[in-house]
Image (cartoon, rainbow, N blue to C red):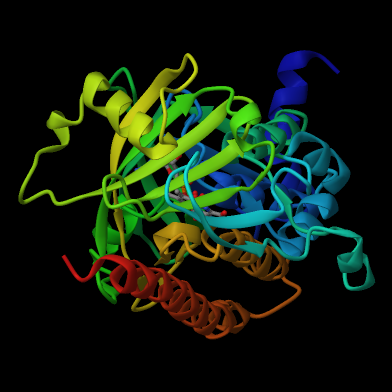
Length: 397
Ligand SMILES: Cc1cc2nc3c(=O)[nH]c(=O)nc-3n(C[C@H](O)[C@H](O)[C@H](O)COP(=O)(O)OP(=O)(O)OC[C@H]3O[C@@H](n4cnc5c(N)ncnc54)[C@H](O)[C@@H]3O)c2cc1C
């Protein structure tokens, strides 16, 4: 078969297999974060082709998630991203086995909690105990599987700028980074476009819950802090020294750290957190002159606790952070999104193949929204306990 004929075959393969009921692009997935990528791989596993687009021209380097739980690892393993490989790329259970409460990184120890479900005891419940892996490494493993999957057409630097629903599908307006505008007809759309979800806005779906609980400046830096943390390794260091505050996240004690520094946007601007000031904040958080370090990125982030009022508008479904935004206390955001993708993918596949009626798709929201609400409440309760501890130590100022 010549290359041109093969490409035409690929384009219409689903129609050849499943008949003319199957659109040439059965599913458009908007957003190639962990949830969009998993959705594409899961659909492919069920024999459904998808088009995946992301407005970013390169993957995000922000470490964000680190705790990937057993259910997410099971899902990854089922789509050809071996859990063993993710474990090998993540932090060791010894390195990431503790959550610590300290004055500063080098300062007094107030206590520690084990970061559970990582050790061999967890093997009684799951073949894949929780692993701590920085989100960019996790996404890179998914991207590798996507690149090898001919059911998925993935384009970066393309934003979805509009949606129009017809009787048998959706027409999406796509805009490239160079400003070229095109349209794409598809059967269904998965909006995996993150917490700010432009698609959710377009559909007029409101979020329920507090939009702004606390503002942080996220300072992503590279430093080798192994010697300093050798006696008390951990993945999270909650800082209680009144001169610093916030959290240090050790994605990799040898080189990848984030300082989450709380700030009040009414009292100071994001721009006031320049490189010089952030170096001083890192020094205060460490509690001594730090070894050489390199600041990669400084960005604001707002902690919220919200769930979308509904997960669906016609043929468009919200998944991942587009549907729910949790405080990170609990490590549940990505993990909840992974199961959204798993739940939605097999249902879309069954309906597209004519194996189930369209009513099956209603069960996506019925099953997943209550889970998001519980996980949101749990994450909020965890954050509340930490604030209580902080107030007990320092008062409410
Ligand atoms: C400090 C921190 C720690 C965290 N720790 C954990 C943890 O340990 N465990 C955990 O489970 N979760 C954790 N999370 C949450 C986790 O990072 C998110 O839940 C996860 O990134 C959500 O994935 P997503 O694919 O839904 O959205 P995103 O990762 O936000 O991806 C959305 C994508 O959509 C793209 N996009 C947006 N609009 C458009 C458009 N119009 N057209 C095309 N593309 C578009 C964006 O470019 C982006 O790539 C943490 C978050 C933070 C901030």
